[in-house]
Amino acid sequence: MRSRSTAELTPSETTRVRTLLDEAFEGRFTDALWRQALGGVHFFVEEDGVPISHASVVPRLLAVRDREINTGYVEAVGTRHRDRGKGLARRILAAAQRHIADTYDLGALHSVLPTFYEHLGWERWRGPTFVRTGSGLMRTETDDGCIHIWRVAASAALDLDDPISCEWRPGFVW
Ligand SMILES: CC(C)(COP(=O)(O)OP(=O)(O)OC[C@H]1O[C@@H](n2cnc3c(N)ncnc32)[C@H](O)[C@@H]1OP(=O)(O)O)[C@@H](O)C(=O)NCCC(=O)NCCS
Image (cartoon, rainbow, N blue to C red; front, side, top):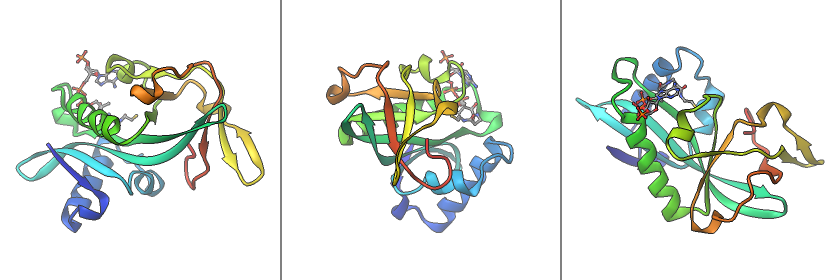
C-alpha cells in the first residue's frame, strides 16, 4: 500500500495510475474524471511496481444546510479486473478513511453502485443535493441518492435528510 500526494507522484506513477483507471473503468474514465482525482492524496496497492487498486481523496467544501464542512472527497476508486474480489478496494478505502479522519471533518463521495460503499460503512445521503454557483444554489436532482458520507467525530450528528451542497467545479460537480 502506498500513499502519495499528487505532487509527490513520479511521472511514471502518474502514468501507471491513469492506465489502471482506464482499464478498471473500461474506457469510461475521462480526462474530466482524472482532473477531479488530482490535488489530494492517492492510495494505491502495487504488484511488481504496478498499481492494481487505487483511490484518491481530494479537499472539498460541502455544506449541510448553512454549515460548511471541510470534506475529504473520494475519487477514482478502481481495481484491476483480474484482481477484483480480493479485498483490495476495501483496504484502499480503509486507508482513505483513516486519512479523512485525521485531516477532515467529513468524508464523501459520489457513486451509482447500489451497495458497495454501504457494505464498507458509508451512508447514503437521503436529502436533496445542490451545487453552489455564482448565481446561487442550483438543484442537482440527478445526483440525489448517489452521495455517500463517512462520518468522523465532527460530523457525527449530521442528519442524512438535510439538504447538502458542494462548491461548483468543472466537469462533474458531484
Ligand atoms: C468497485 C471496485 C473498485 C471493487 O474493487 P475490489 O477490489 O474488487 O473490491 P473488494 O474486493 O475490496 O470488495 C469489497 C466488498 O465490496 C463488494 N463488491 C465488490 N465489487 C462490488 C460491486 N461492483 N458492487 C457491489 N459490491 C461490490 C465485495 O463483495 C466485497 O464485499 P465483502 O467484503 O462483504 O465480500 C471494482 O469492481 C472496480 O474497479 N469497478 C470498476 C470501477 C468502479 O465502478 N469504481 C467505483 C466507482 S464509484
